[in-house]
Amino acid sequence: MVYTCHKSLSHLLFEKSGGTTLKSIYKCMKKTLSVRVGADPRYGHATDKEIVAFEPGRTGASFVNVDTLTPPGILRAQELGLVPSGLADLVVTTNALNFAIEHLYDRSHKGRVLALFRHPVDRLASKFYYAQIATWERSYHPQWKEIDILDWAEHINHDKNQLVKTLARVGEFGKVTETDLTAAVKTVKLRFIVGLMNEMEESIHRFNVFMGVNESEENNKICMDQFFGHGTKKENSNPHPKVEEGSPAWQVLARDNEFDIRLYESIVEIFGEQTEIIEEYARSMAVWNGQE
Image 1 (cartoon, rainbow, N blue to C red):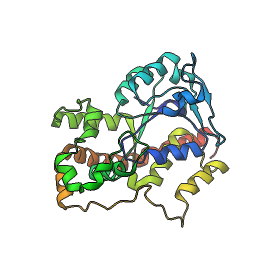
Image 2 (tube, rainbow, N blue to C red):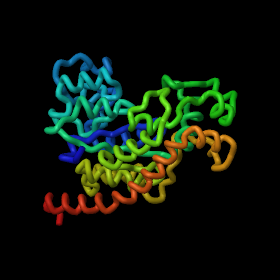
Image 3 (cartoon, helix red, strand yellow):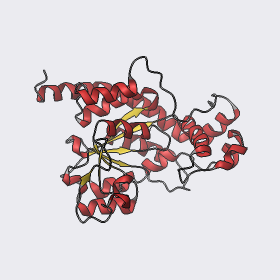
Image 4 (cartoon, rainbow, N blue to C red):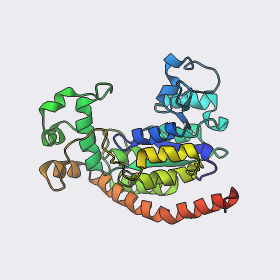
């Protein structure tokens, strides 16, 4: 899948991998997103017969009236012509990525996938602690407050090699193989502009290049400063104890997610390899737009 224009971009959300921050940044920039809120019946567009964009509040952020996080929502987006409409700056999806690609994009409407990645052990640790306090989420598990992360990792956690499973189309309870890992790495190389949570500002800069975001424009500059301003101490939205590498909990989570860790290591290499590609694309777009 190749990049054609910023109106044909998808963002893949992996749980506890910076997706909330990314959506907040682009809402701040007044971009139009395809996320669950667009199909929320409270806003009166859930049963529209045509694709529309609307602003549910006074922030300037807008949404299209489809939910691209689920297969039924993706089918509705296909029926209404989401991608051909060009209304969404960013189509957001989760584990339904392959389903979204198959049903929303075609030879005439191609795109790139933007995705933020996090070390698998760190992602799972964040998931464990977040579920203890997130009363607003379906994944809320207050009973996990009564156990430690080692017990959870050994006896409760079923999130194992989820990244490879998603990218290589392995069923939730399927066994991941070397072939699946190879397929996942190939998919990332061919389709993804990758970002890393521990390189968040640089990752957003790269996404901005492909979205056609001019960071020198006043509002966009304000938004970038709000999230990445120098001298501003950034806190984890859900501070929690770090699982130290080599600790018993780390060893269990790493053992159960061996393929995801190997995939992540490949993604870190791809992130480095894409530096020159991003820079060259930025230069070409600057020339095209008469900025050089």
